[in-house]
Structure formats: structure tokens, C-alpha cells
Length: 365
Ligand code: ADP
Ligand code: MG
Image 1 (spheres, helix red, strand yellow):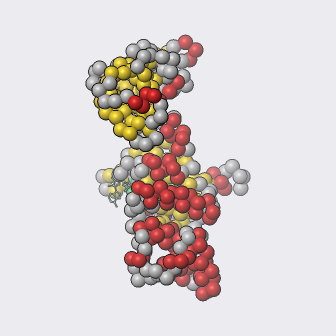
Image 2 (image 1 turned 90 degrees about the vertical axis):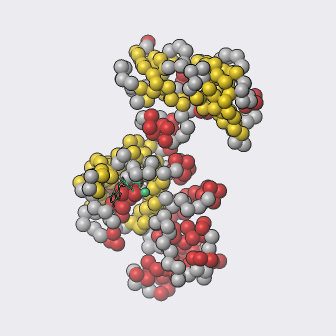
Image 3 (image 1 turned 45 degrees about the vertical axis):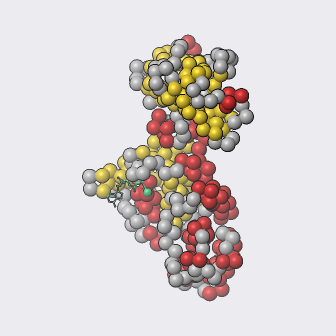
């Protein structure tokens, strides 16, 4: 098989998959290829079809239409336990009466491996998740983070080609979640397993993923690396889902040299947008990230377009100061400045200018 054919380089190839539950269309025309060894996220709001897609990959649901290949094999008619995948559930579903080691060994016993092989593999997994010292404990004697690691070790013990993780860090508090993200990445790298993570948390998906699929209303809207999704979102919905966003209704017209000129409500002048594919006449939006907004007392060269505003609210977030600014027409603009920057000293009530460079603006549908 050629190295560039989808089934050779991809762990998962999904073609035209649709799934309905009665009148609810959970998935519609899903095409998706996930590369071997990739850390891949399915990101989208609640109800967008993420879990359904994961359950189809695992074999717990059958698609109404379309095909699924895992590791080069067609999966139609293959039951879950014969697929080269394993799923780690959000609840972890550990066996309360078994020890840490017993939980990890459980799937290996079902495989009818010999006792020495089971013990060796269990020890290897305990080491991988750094729980050697807790091998004899029961789940109720563990912290949330430790239980998560047991579930991960148990799911990896049989060496699946693909590990499916549904909201793997959802049960942990924020700080622990950040630590565990790094841990999850380390384990994924050291095993070389393809990880597919379902999450509704965009920061988590951005922190973990090599690439991610943005799902909305049962469809995949965009598949890209996190930075690309953030900087070049496929549409306004995606842009707003992966980060804070300022949005202005806009119209575009052709300018010189293939540049588009956007006119946006509340912004003086025409904004020259390079490399945009939005057709003229269509309703569209000019969007700007808060970190691209500039604050100044006087219009200077740090921005191409300036607007008068009043500081409505300011929040010191540590490294950054986040501003809510009010334009004369009442529209709110979000801005961010590094806490050390002079403009970060603006206080609520101050009348100032907020500006942006045309190069940072995007026009989206
Ligand atoms: P997500 O994981 O993104 O929150 P789901 O895949 O769980 O989304 O659900 C997608 C849609 O399908 C939702 O509208 C949900 O209510 C519906 N759905 C999922 N599973 C079932 C089911 N077993 N029976 C009926 N509707 C379902
Ligand atoms: Mg879900």
C-alpha cells in the first residue's frame, strides 16, 4: 500500500457517516481522517454529535450511512471488543472492589495471558502512569487525579491502536486539569497510541491536540491545528467558539490589487483586508481578537483604525489586563493588554481610543 494512501498513514478514516435518533440528526455527512500517532480532539458545543461519533468509532453505535476504517480495516459488522480501540469513559468506571493493579490487569486477564505476562504488563502500566507506590490501593483511597491515571492505564494495558477519551479531564478541578494535560500528552507520546479526545473545553483541546475537528450541529466545520483554527477560523461561529471575539457587521467591496475593502458599522474608514475569500454582497462580519486591540490616548502609528471609547470595566488577570470598552453606539469591545504595558494602566471611566491594525482583522461569514 502506498505510504500516502489514507489507510496506510491514517489510524481512522471516516467517509460520509450519518446518524439519526428518531427525528434528531446527530451526525450528517461526516468525513474525517485521523493520522497514526496523532493527538486529535473533537471539539464542539454540547449536543453537536461528538459522543455519537466516538461511540460509532468504538462500535457501540452503528452509522445509518457511510463507512469507517480503523488501522486499515473496514469496521462494518466488527463488534466493539474486536476493534483495535479502547474507550476511557468520563466516569472512569473503575471496579471499586479491585485494587489499582487489579483494575489495570482486568482486561489482560480477559485476554487469557499467562500470569507472568499479566504481571509484567501491569507493572509497565503502573510505571507509565507513575502509580507504582499505590498499586495495592482501592479506588476510594485515591484522589480524582489518581483515579484518572488508573483509568488511563487500564485503557492502555491491552495496547489499543486508538484510545478514545470522552471528556477525560472533565471531573478534575482547573489546576489539576492543567497538570493532567501535560501528563496525558507525555503518555500519548511515549506509547505512540493515537488519542482521540472529546471535549467541549476549547482551551483543553488547544493545549492537547496536534489537530482538532470543530463540530457543530452534527457536522464537522473545520479540521486544523489549534493555531490555524484560532487564527484562520472557517467561519464566525468557529472563531467565537475557540476564543473571545469582537464582531462587527460588515460589507465588502473589491479594492485595488485583489484587496477587499470592508466597511463595518461603528468603525471609521474602509478596512483593507488581504487574503479573504468572502464574496461581495454577502452579509459578513469583521472580527478582531481582544489581543489585537490597541489602547492609546492619541491616535498613533500602532493602529490603522481608531475609535473613541470609554473604559467600562477592567480585570487584572495577572499577566494580562482585560478591558471591556464601550463605543459611542453602546457596542462593547473586548481588549487585552500585557499588564506591564503603559496602556494597561487605564482605569474604568477613562475616555480613550481603541484601535487595530487592518492586518489583524478578518472578514468571516
Ligand atoms: P455531544 O457529545 O456533542 O454533546 P451527542 O453526540 O451526545 O453530542 O448528541 C448529539 C445529538 O444526538 C443530541 O441532540 C442528542 O440529544 C442526540 N442523541 C445522542 N444519543 C442519543 C440517543 N441514544 N437517543 C436519542 N438521541 C440521542
Ligand atoms: Mg458528549
